[in-house]
Image 1: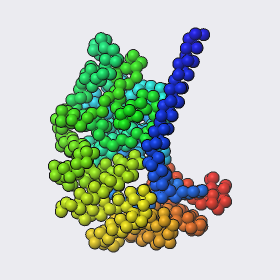
Image 2: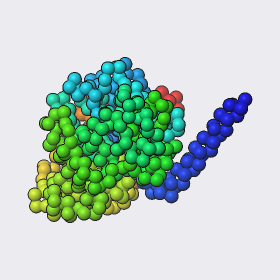
Image 3: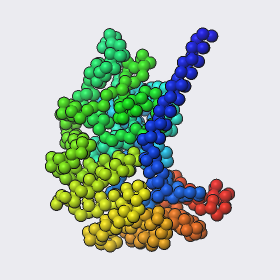
Image 4: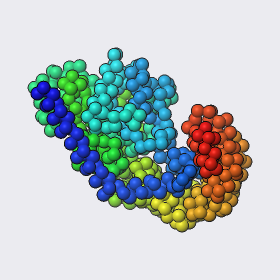
Length: 537
């Protein structure tokens, strides 16, 4: 009976603590994230329509926007591993060839994303785990422990992971090459970094150490050999620095976290990096939180000097270190100095990537600032191509749209269009994409006739360039359907949605998410027509 009372008391205290943390998170979201939240809603209304029966193409993002947006990438081209799929894997950490990953941009809701940073245990095979899959088991136990404690979402469907072995094509000639353009964006999209440390000999160093002694200096005191080796490895060091330096928006993750993770995020305003080893598993203890690496540590622990299994990766590491140094100087408002040190080309590219990270985190004003800097850098550089400047203008126009500044967005798109017409022929696909972006702005302004006129130009160019059965043609039909729906011309809207659907099924297959989104749009029209049975179907 006494044990039962104590258990109930502990449970009550845990509930009270959870409510306190929830209130803290809600207060922070209210006071710090109203702007980001309202802009996210505005973006959804602008790009995909809003209101009763509004189309839901691309999860609130106009399909044509994806087709015509220009150089922005966001999380496109990045794969993630759903936690549910990881748990179902029969071979431990799954290989990319098992095809258990999904595109990071294929989800309709904000998920909790975990970047797994680890040292491969059998690099000569190559394989990240040892016999019996001890790392895989540690990984799952750590996540399950954090779920049970309310630190991260308890629903497996709300968690995805990025693990190199699963998410990078291991059959490619040079798998690491996939990281060249994506490293900053991959870390930037993640909410937490997790390092599992297999250590069968943990008692030999941990027997005389209490947890609080280790917590004072996890990096130096945690005695596992795999952890000591982790600090020597170039890729591991690089991932730690990226985790600490790439922009992170606490407001976006607050609704998904609690407990020690919430405490860390609200106190440090940084992306948490946790260590979970065999010691913690055996002692049923929580993971350790690492102190974010400061700028000066980059000189002391330069990943460019770290150990590598393949020396072929050395230049890749040095390139990413350059990205780190540039992003640090940008954060310190030393962009001009960065240009003088590293050159306009590399600085502009890093600014592009930082802008994409800000976009993914709904920091549209910060995204605009980075794009403006990139434009200024390119315009000042005599070696920059007009095409690069035009592409930056395309991106800037999109950001202005997200901010609801449609007049400036239209002016920016028009400036990009004039440059593109001088660079390319008038029927070039880049010209078509800018026409599409302008159509989106006119649609947002309620000028539907102009939006249809511009979308028709997009359709003509795409059809002439790609043929009638291309996905971009399908997305343009969809966009025209969106406009007809807003005009109340439901029969015409259904006609264009049907054209979009037929091409998507032919190009992508019946079970593709884009096909589902077009079905959803058709259901929206039928709902507005009062055909509820057909809409439900």
